[in-house]
Image 1: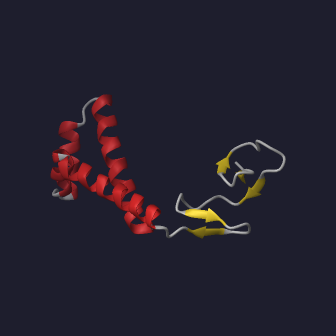
Image 2: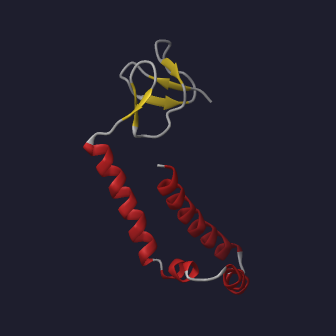
Length: 113
């Protein structure tokens, strides 16, 4: 996949849309802006506030998810037993996988941001 900056300065991924669009390296995250030669972090208040809002939203989701809270308090052996007892269908497996994916994403964002 290739990455581009269009004539208006907007970033996009995929096939080139216009011959005058500039090919760039992949943008690290939405918090970075292209300065003409490289990606630089945008430390504007708006970007920081958006990030805080996203972090708070994720925290609220996890605080209100009673099943996830219960799992977080379990030992690894208890989690295995809980999965064996409660994840018995494809639908339940999908639900559990979605829950774990959200938790993994939130954790990764906190660690790698």
